[in-house]
Amino acid sequence: MKDVALVLSSGGARGLAHIGAIEEIEAQGYRITSLAGCSMGALIGGVYAAGKLTEFREWMRTIDRKKMLKLTDFSLGLNHIVKGTRIIEAIMEFVPDMPIESLPIPYCAVATDWRAGREVVFRKGSLFEAIRASISLPAFYEPVQRDGMILIDGGVTNPIPLNRVERHDGDILIGVDVSGEDYTAKQEERIEQSKRRTSFSQKIINKLRPEGIEFNSYTMLTRASSLMIRQNSILMAQLMHPDVLVDIQMNNYGSFDYDKSEKIIAVGRKKTQQALNKI
Image (cartoon, rainbow, N blue to C red):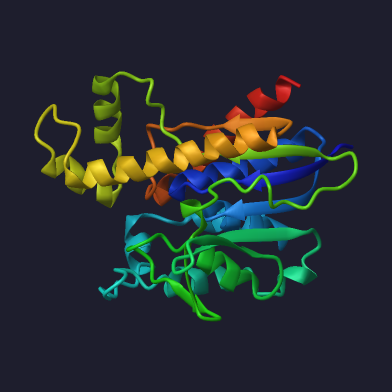
């Protein structure tokens, strides 16, 4: 049985593909011996390290638009529109908080110190404080304030922290990157794919966007952010040379399509199978 140091990227709801990736890695006889994650990757990785991935997947099956709205604690603060407490408390009902150092395998989560402009790596302390800091999407979730720092999403500085996972002799480094969209697709195809998304955010965008026009102020900002994160991911992979890089670029699913969990998980499993079959 081959040991794996696994790194899971940021990506919002697309990060649910990490569940499929983990399931496929284990199905092929690999043993995950350490984990590092950013944003949604930090959440999935932390839940897995706590031994509760199956329970989390079953809970995600129950998520529909009505439940998503119930779990969204709107706040309209000066630096956020959602507090982000309600979703963490819901997960903690079946994944108890625990010290990171007590997890059965080494785990770390990456966040960003907004003030200092640097990444912050959590290797000890509260698991859910680390996760909550790592998923703090700027201007959306309320930042986490800790030790004089204002902590926001780790994807701002290190969306796929291949350089932060703990390594062991003889293990293989696998990275799963869901941070990108397939920009090689034709413009008309991307527009049609985005129109087929049914998340709240995408429906609003589709109503605002004139027929045949792909961009407005919102889509310009979100795509610019996505491109920057994507480039950082590519550069990190070039720097660290993972043994396997599962590059999952999705156009059919957006960052808030949490009610599509089973379909996104299936994409993650299929892409991971293809990547592992090449070695």
